[in-house]
Amino acid sequence: RESPGKRGTFTDYIQTDASVNPGNSGGPLLNLRGEVIGINTAVIPNRQVAFAIPINLAKSLLPDLQARGRIAWGFLGVSIQDVTQELAKAMGVPEVKGALVNNVLAGQPAEAAGMKRGDIILQFDGKAIPNVRSLQRTVSFTAVGKQVEVQIFRGGKLETLTVKVGEAATAERRAVAPPARRDLGMTVEELDAEKVKKFKLREGEEGLVISDVAKGGAASSAGIRAGDLIREVNRREVRSLEGYRSALRRDEGEDVDLFLLQRGQNHFYVAVKPKT
Image (cartoon, rainbow, N blue to C red; front, side, top):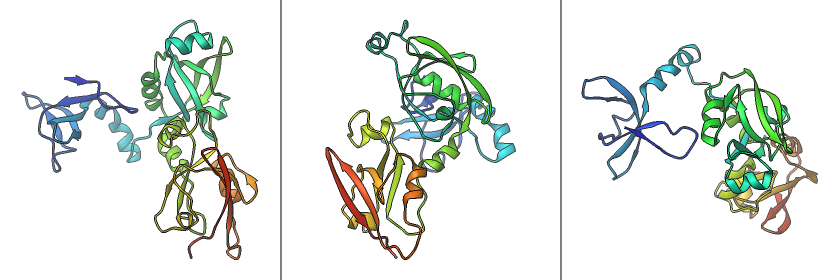
């Protein structure tokens, strides 16, 4: 039986009460005729409910696996939400449909195509986009590198952008700044709606957030916390990971990096001496 599944990019799972435990997760889900109808993937502990990837979906991915050894998922580089009746009225949208862009990630395909916050995506590569789930699935299954037309509603009229679809795995690798030559003991990421909610930040915040601080590391010793926003590094304003990387000290002889951080309404400077 089909299940509404879990929240996330992919929700087309087969829900089953077949016993799925370590050892048979990743194995086949069979029907009463002995036919493989899915691949066991996840389980809700102590609920006797499991989820399997439908076999037709798995089969459609085999050519990519054979050619690359991995799945290349399409990626747009936006944070989105569904258009509600209230939002449609406030934004002058004639119909309650589409995916509303609330953040555009720096250096990703959507930004390169000129997409902006407040755009409502109505079509992607000729396919109608009624909601967020539809856009997530359509983009994910679009070939990486393909040039597609995206119809958006902006400022009371329809416009068309041309986007070159990126690769999700590549974007995820770029989403976290790699360690500098010296270990600062923290993970820095670009802000999106999910992180604003996770760290209980103000709506509309943008820039960089410290998403993780290693216990006993340099950042922790300096009093930095997960959820702190980075405003400056070594007296340079930073809004992207590229800017963050370039602002960090390069010379081993320079002992500290100076950060201007925001925590709530407060701004403060912190000097971080890397662990050696």
